[in-house]
Length: 334
Image 1 (cartoon, rainbow, N blue to C red):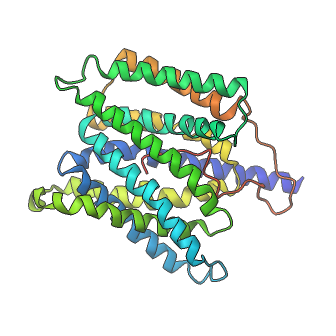
Image 2 (image 1 turned 90 degrees about the vertical axis):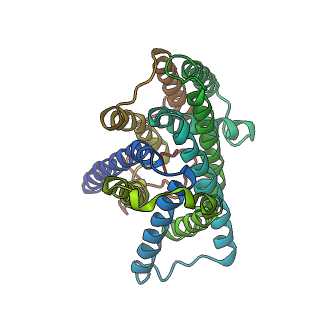
Image 3 (image 1 turned 135 degrees about the horizontal axis):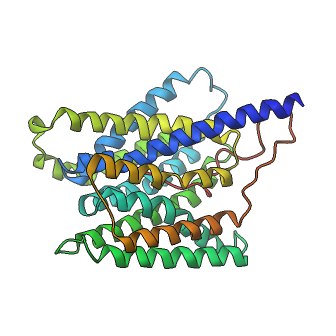
């Protein structure tokens, strides 16, 4: 009885950590859009993740005494860095590029909703997930919703040059990058310290982001950047990057990855709210319909209707879920 009560308390705290994480992730879309409005998207990306990498390195140093027994081998470091090129470099190159062309409200729907759909689809094709009727139906719904959303993006409010639709398609490439990262990082993170692995991956990705950013830096009038722009940059590095990471793994110590995925679908709620309130953005009725269909398909494909989580059978107070298993978790503005 005591173990069950303890688990319930830990689970409640875990849900709060995860919900706070999703709020950070959702707000990152609007905050990043505000930064992209004052500098090239390549520079905005490297500032956010350069700052995030520094914070993670600092956290790793401060936690060094507590984790002396957990070391990564040279091979694990290389693999973590390689995976970071997908999850940090490729994903954020597309993410910030999309923000420079389309509203943040579109990205806050496309990326967190379609990434799990793409991930599940790839795993089904590879034979690593069962192709059940519910899963196939969910994938079909997700694709249909995405098609509807993109048709809507090409209509009213798309701009004379069609930049909104182009930006949305680039967001889709970002979702694909994160899906590939999620699959690849599973093997890298299992059996390793998540903070160390993620730090190495983030540092590698941030260094790679420097390559396209350096030629664009002369375009930035640094003296003209407002205090609010710098505040947004600092917030992106601290909140949605470093703090959200810590909250995320605290939550996953108790809550299963599949349950965390369902909570992840609150990201569009936070993203849309921030985009509307702070940026005055909106989307078409057709896009709204497509978003609802996408969300329904994603939920069905990822969960297959199994949402309930049972208390663990162990006495340690933690579930058997692997906190380093990100395959069922999606991005978020990270």
